[in-house]
Length: 176
Image 1 (tube, rainbow, N blue to C red):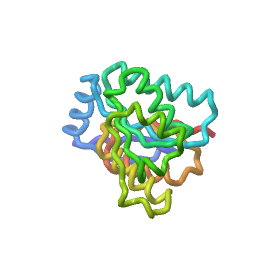
Image 2 (cartoon, rainbow, N blue to C red):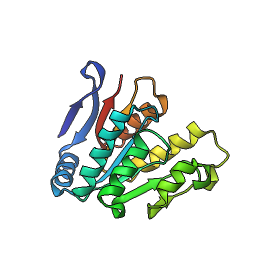
Image 3 (tube, one colour):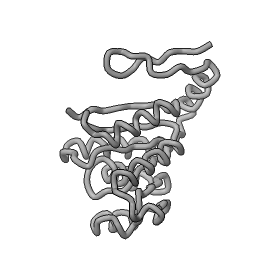
Image 4 (cartoon, rainbow, N blue to C red):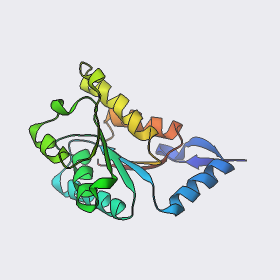
């Protein structure tokens, strides 16, 4: 038996999922301890950053591991700050490239993070290409993706498609 998930613009069918897969996802949701990826735009008003920070804080207080990427502004840094406030042990940061390629402000914040994954092999890639690879890595290691983006955010839209193909639980917040 398969179940069609209706999502996206116009109510298009985006995934078929077996009853067994659905059952596994429901058990994971009910267990309360998940690996949740939070990614999104760097162009985020401060009020929205506070919402993301509060969300990450709340999820970490509920014993969920938060996985995100680096960044000096926007969604990713808000997710980092919220998780650090709740429980830094439940934070994983996967960088698109290396720590030395982060801003000085971000490096200071990341000093409080125990689990940082760097990718020096991506040091010479275009940043958007490194981010695409990074987001796939983050999504692959998570049970769920929460993404904040604008409709013209191509790299994040690709990440959402990857999450859909990977049959991840997906929450999308469009900011425009």
